[in-house]
Image (cartoon, rainbow, N blue to C red; front, side, top):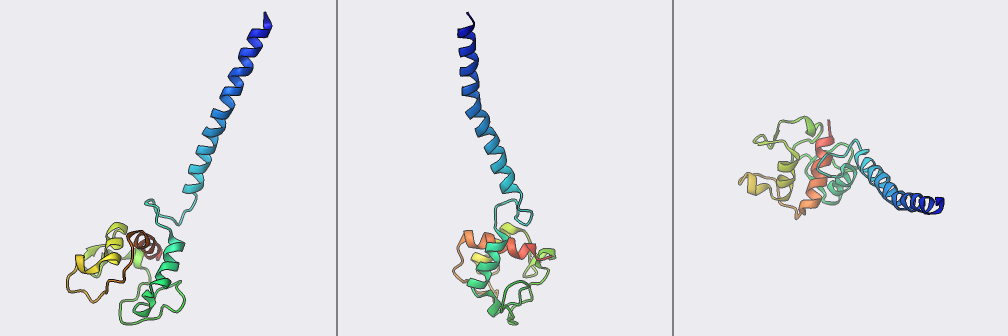
Length: 135
């Protein structure tokens, strides 16, 4: 009589163990993603953004803290960019608008001196994350 009950208990534990394992892994994966304090909520990568700013040669026109050789003076200094209220003195400084600005500045301010550099939206999101991290 006890054999069927033991078998039922064993089956229940064997079935629940993988489910519990998956639940624990899901929680751990979520907390690992959230542990990057420097990463903004929208998923932009601060470190990747810094590297992309160098790759797109933004330092030819701008001086940018943390970006080697970014010593340009044709455009504004980008130190403490995350504290600024506006982009180019006209557009609210949000990550979303900053990413749009990086991709296509002329679509936001027609007569801007900022050139379009062929930056993809994904790259711009990361570049915006880096610039917003400059406090």
